[in-house]
Amino acid sequence: MQFAGSHILSIAQFERPDVEHIFTVADRMQPYAHRKRVTKVLDGAILGNMFFEPSTRTRVSFGSAFNLLGGEVRETTGFESSAIAKGESLYDTARVLSGYSDVIVMRHPAEGSVAEFAAASRVPVLNGGDGSNEHPSQALLDLYTIRKELAGRGRGLEHLRIAMVGDLRYGRTVHSLCKLLGLFQGVQVVLVSPDELRMPGEIVEAMREAGLDVLESDQLEASIAHVDIVYSTRIQEERFQSQAEADLYRGRFRLNQSVYTANCEPNTVIMHPLPRDSRNNARELDDDLNDNPNLAIFRQTDNGVLVRMALFALVLDVADEVDRHARDVNWYTAGRF
Image 1 (cartoon, helix red, strand yellow):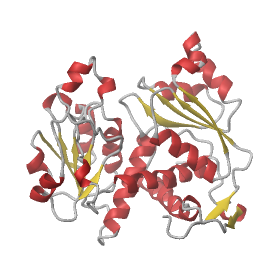
Image 2 (tube, rainbow, N blue to C red):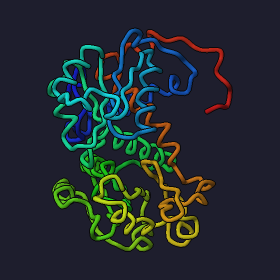
Image 3 (tube, helix red, strand yellow):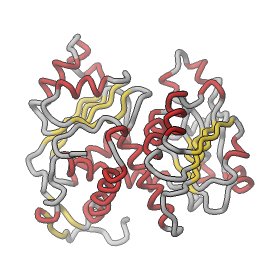
Image 4 (cartoon, rainbow, N blue to C red):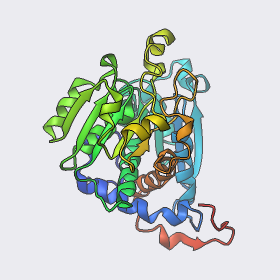
């Protein structure tokens, strides 16, 4: 695809060479993300970070990525602090705020809302999550993490075996990741969920049409026995009609160290898009996994900054200029990263 000036709204935009190009640029961002070098390639540029749904990691990660490239961030969080609460349309909001920004990241609880906003925007828009639909940057950082984890074992992405566990109906991160995996050969995906929270049928069908080997199950232990990656997700309670309905499924599939030891291969990587639900009746990833070296959830969040830096650099067409606007720093604390 042509990155410069483009919106990033869906995984469907990418072919495999596009993904590999993003990852190559992300690799080059490491000294900047690790504070070993400073670049001002986006000096004077403004990111409009518009989050109309709760977010910690995604919002701060995008903001940090932009700051690390030398740009400035302006934020709107929640409907109540925006003109949308006064009845302003997405069209009007897009026309106004794209006049204040050079690029916009948007999260919104309604499916298709970010694409609607982007259609009226005068600057590139990146989808930070639209309802239960998609979360493209999360899928990219997830795959980037998988690539790095497997590379340490002398493996590539071909013939990957991955189990996705939990709320697959409403989990937008797994929706995007499943679409992304369709670009690679020999991938086996085991979808583990209660019957009521199964992956949407159209996504499963598209995966199979792309050549993925897809299995569906409601049995955790058997499903994680022979995989490279266990990708756990929380119950998306904000998508349910009531708290009581969400509570029916909370804690259904709990991965802890004893379950991991009894069922997983020794080097199986554990991933989660976060936040993990640490309440006693949930704990889809138990705290007793924190010392497991195969727990990659915090490496995922670090990788998210790299991938989002790459997306900004590509969309704003400065990927080849980053080093020219850089200098080494002397305040870097050795061993911090």
